[in-house]
Length: 468
Image (tube, rainbow, N blue to C red):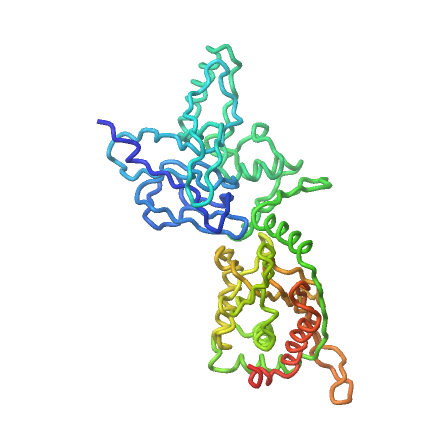
């Protein structure tokens, strides 16, 4: 008796891992067909317009099929993996095709006289509140067969094609998903590549060899959070990199912010020698042991105190309702440059945190961003942002507001410079701060007061006690 495939196989669909996201790119599969999985096990990593996110599977069973290769962008609500939740209960029949699934093999030649029957989706299938899933007119991806079975299947397909009067189709080149993506990035046709791997599989080295006249060396390993490197063929004058994911969303947000909110930027250069001394003292303080202590920590605390003294800076402009929304909490954003682009996670309720708590939160934020594990929730709801351009050795900049926020503070490099101190020119630690603000709700007086307060605290950090 054949098992009911509708009960035996479970389709896991691409979820909306943010607020209103419509698609995500599959960065990496952690499982392959035949692997056992358990409820809650991470099976893949995807990149949305906001962050890279690991997806856990909600079933126990065995992976039956990966429906998309790495590097594929998939609509939310589309099935991405099939799980056999009752392995061993009978022959593993093919599960019914997912109605919302685009095909990986849609471009492969098919016999013209006998098109493959296909169940067409009836309208949009709602999967999440607020939107549905786009229809697809393409066919579902064929199941992967064992390597030894490929020649027989290809021969059968060729015979069938000849019987139909069509020219025999060339078998699809054998290559793993990362190799296919590499070939796509380099513009290499896999059918023109000579395979050297076992059972005729095309390797990364084969693709590199096809891209350059000389044999290519094996590429260096890439960190998990970094995108796959794009090799440049010898003599190439241009390289085109698709804009997607975080970079695409950031570009759209920055353009929207720059041409929506009227930006004003003010600057102040100051002596932070006392702050730098305090940083060294805090590093030796037992209450700060094991915490991230650096100038950014004290700059963040100084900004929080300045906001407390000038709460009007912590607001947002509501264009639809023509209102200024005053925030009575501070979610402090910290701009972070990552291999996928600029992200701005924020420390929730930073205004309520003590200095050790702020140091702990800042350390966690930086470590998570560096590992590429920042969640979409961590980047939502920010009110004011700090961007530390000084780490790149530049003096300062004119930062663009994070969408929905009214102010952003740029911190320049801290350098030893000649400075007049107590009537004499002495070498002092000096930096330049730049504060950009939305001039619709922050006038010059308010912006100047905030910037002056931050500078005063950093020049004399004892004010952290008297002003807090």
